[in-house]
Image (cartoon, rainbow, N blue to C red; front, side, top):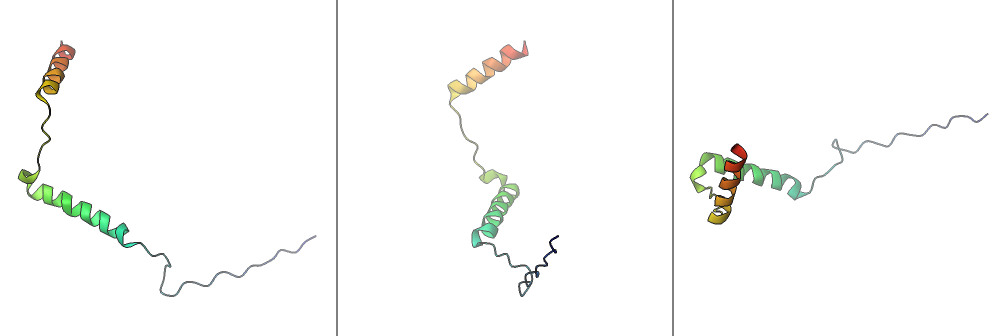
Amino acid sequence: MSAPTHTRPLPAAPGGVGVRLPWWALALPILAFVALLALILNPSDAQAASGDPAITDLVDRVRQLVAR
């Protein structure tokens, strides 16, 4: 019969959690938040993508056919 072995717990990292994030892990969400906030505050700066008129006409005709 074998005896159970006891392992020592690892010492805790000084200063709390030992995980460090890279700089971009905080910068990218902040940049996205600021960009979306700017669009919400001033929506006139947002440019809508202009599509080809032929594609727009085709989509309108398909929508009319489906609506029948």
